[in-house]
Length: 125
Image (cartoon, rainbow, N blue to C red; front, side, top):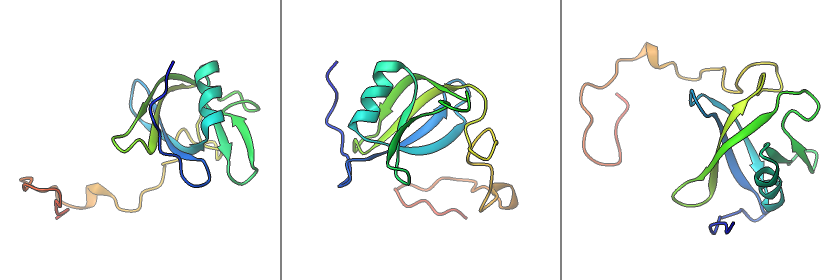
């Protein structure tokens, strides 16, 4: 299988957003290099590069909370991957289902705009 020309950063890494394939819940963000991507595609399980430990790690290797990869997409700039996975157990090292369990700006506390203006710069209120 031929891979598209992906844009890895100067460290050879690419950002990976991980989503539950059926609910589209965002689970986590991690990093891959070409080898981690190859391991992922070869095994069907999510492999990442740990920037802090400088090692490859398969999600769930020790915890059993594996990510079975359903699809890998990439964005329009080819600098971010989207892994659609079936998450077994929790995704976050804290024990939470997702790493995104905290809110900085609750949408419920503001009124949604009644009309969406034209253009790329859409005001939030």
